[in-house]
Image (cartoon, rainbow, N blue to C red; front, side, top):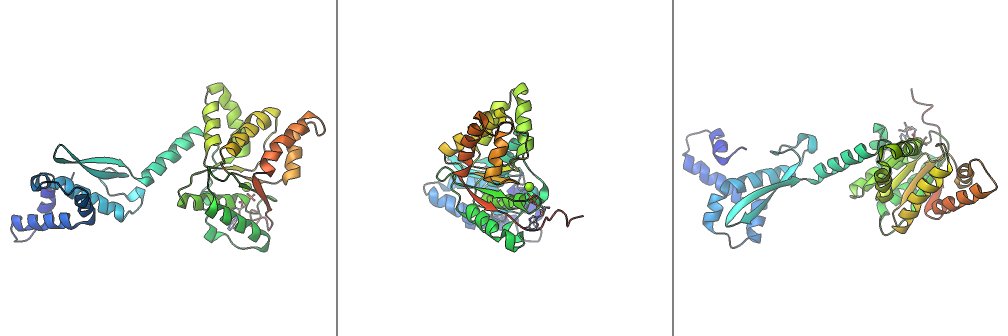
Length: 311
Ligand code: ADP
Ligand code: MG
């Protein structure tokens, strides 16, 4: 910890130690963070403040780092990603450290990644922004709806989601990435899973005991994005005991679920009925489909296949 004393050592010149000390002290007491603290604790005695000077110094220094935050990777604080809180205990000033919002977010992401491996994370998608969405006539309605959702979503109060469908490579997943980023700026956490991998992962996790944990996580995601539904191998277990269960819960809790698919609603319904397009399977498929139809706005995404134009 860089103390006041060692800070003073950095200061050179002919001025007396005392003068420098007084100046530093004044600077500490002038800092807005310390001033606020003093306003909230008007009865602190001068002795307490004097004895707690190094704490006050540390506090204002680190808080001012945070006020000019250069991002978590470049955090200059003593403990990277931690912010000090100043408090009074038995007439003495004390500091405690807790993770800052950026650190908390990183921790949440880490936890999420360690639990669910099929989270969808190509870099270009993770960094997608609405500002980068190149406009193209076939996609403008979809972009508009996507932005509208991102700006107005209220998980827990409004469970309405989106269903973006269209051909391969038109930018459905990209739009979902842009939604996730916009939501993040609003402090809303979203979970994007690539459906074929996710269902496979869930199936495998039955053996290792993490199935319920994974299922619960996805059930409770503030905003859940099912990327590429319809591309998975459908079974009645996946449809009724996984997809149906997740959607039922999310509808009750008013948590929005978003989908991308190569299929429109009717085609997805057929896919969900997989081996029996007339009997009980179709009925069950219809039941799950109801939960998708009623709780999403469906938008077709058109345009060029952008992957064909890439190297
Ligand atoms: P889909 O999910 O519909 O198959 P993607 O979202 O994966 O398509 O998009 C295909 C490629 O085009 C990706 O490499 C993506 O980064 C890029 N892309 C998609 N939409 C846009 C856009 N609006 N602006 C710039 N690049 C885009
Ligand atoms: Mg996609």
